[in-house]
Length: 474
Ligand code: SF4
Image (tube, rainbow, N blue to C red; front, top):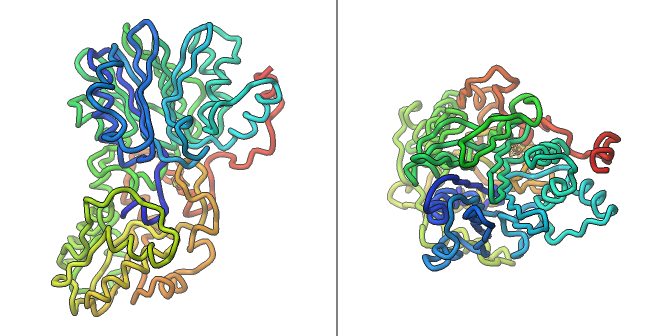
């Protein structure tokens, strides 16, 4: 669905490249492929082996960069970032990669995910004299690295990583090397690829396809890759602590042409749609339609399995810009209509099965149901290709309170009434796990399901720092 009208947004996307003569330009293309993961800011930091230089700004990738800016920062390697502001708020100082200069050298950091203990770490560091420049939790990581007395640089980074709790796919770059880390549960995706003699890393494999890079493998949870002119070295900063890849990446967040841990996102969504059709075989309909864009794959799967024709019942207006401030209900209604339109000839007098990937607040679903009915649909049956979202996410998706989630306080029948649908069916958690079909033996086949079950793979409200953590911080 349309991220900006539903209240469910990814936090960020990261991209890195080492060993290429056009790292700024290739990062630009990489960020284009990751634009769906964040539209509020973008940045690239380049090293030429002598120092680090940044170009960044607020807005879309195409608004932030131009040929002139990219040419000025060329070198041999870069890290890059697209941002959606969930943690730390917006503002230029929070646009990543964050770049720090000191007498011992410069350092850039790009981060996807949310740290659940950032505030504790920050308070502790501030009491010890650190001054923070941004409100981003990523800055904490830089202070931790800087504070470490270990050597070499990778040992400092490993020590810092061991103090972090939560979700992180992290790129750290100096003029000599790029360090790539994924949290011990692998909550957010991160892949390694090859481009000529150089190396690339990205939140999603669709970025590799766009620049002609070849996928090599996923970065393992708890793994630290060191990439420099000699190639790639794999190290660990901690043992893997049970895979828990975000299920919503497969359901909604990632691009359908990306593969996550070897599973193509479009195919996983199609299987979820097929499973959903099996789980609601009692529903009678004349036409199946998906809410664009992310529900189309599931709708195709649903139609294939049920034998009911798939049709384009809803069209997305591609030329609507990012959300403007919509303070009143009336303006919000108009906002949705600007972004989605029903195809009257498809839905008129039909029993429409409307496939969507999730329900957050329920307000958007109700608007779409009303829109289809106003266009003449005889019945609207809403089928959702994921289970009810009952609990907030603390790992980088911006549902951070129960109040934002209709399923936290309403059962399925109450939600059906609220969205004014003729019927409402959610995919079962078991059906979702089996449909995604990840090749792992871990619990839930290595998926995080916390927003459907309330069972979080990490501590989420650490009360304070543990004694050994304080000791590490000095
Ligand atoms: S809580 Fe939900 S949205 Fe957050 S990481 Fe887990 S599965 Fe993804």
